[in-house]
Length: 132
Image 1 (cartoon, helix red, strand yellow):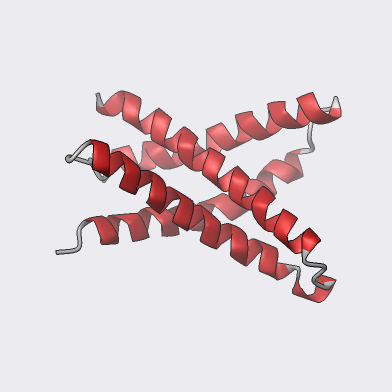
Image 2 (image 1 turned 90 degrees about the vertical axis):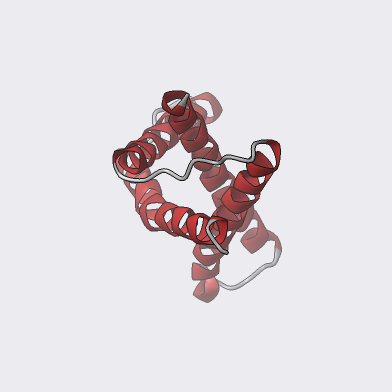
């Protein structure tokens, strides 16, 4: 059962990451913040990703009392699957919407966002989940 949970949970986290990026960019565009504060979109995306994953895990935990926190090699697999899912979702979504393949540097930027953000999300969810 653990083998199927890793790809599904990593897909959810990749979707949360992408949604957080889009949501924060939309907030930035509608609020008419100057370009000097464009870094606020990145900060909002990190916060939305962490909150989104925490809410997802909370909902899952309410349905299933025993939530397995990934450690060791399962954590590495989860992390790698999240990067792969993001590449697949973004590449095909970009192709469907624009009719062209995205540049590789766009994927690298998404992965640069994902690496620290997902680590923070997993760390915070782990710490909150094991709070006594």
